[in-house]
Amino acid sequence: MRPEVLAAVFIGGCLYAFTALSKSVLEGERFDPRKLSKTIFLAGLLAVLNTVMGVGEFSEIDLVIQGAGETVLLDKLLKLLRVLVAGMDEPRW
Image (cartoon, rainbow, N blue to C red):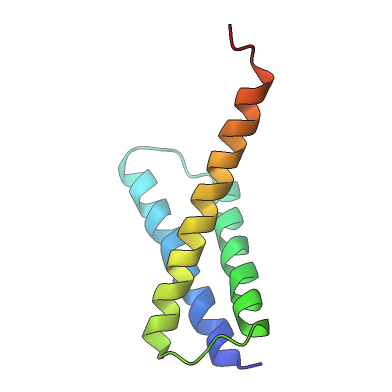
């Protein structure tokens, strides 16, 4: 297990989280600590999974970008899943 892989992927995910937070605040949304903490949790989870799976043959900047990209993808997929599941509860007609 390489700690620099863990750190780089986590930093990438956190950068995405803080970018999304900044965008929301600039658009006038109220700060929601739950949204930020969920995204940071996802970044940590992905960092651990990447480290355990042995990812790390890339440069540090590549790992940061990979961490951000994976966090964005998982975040969007979970949001889509939540919308789809909520839509199943509503009648179609």
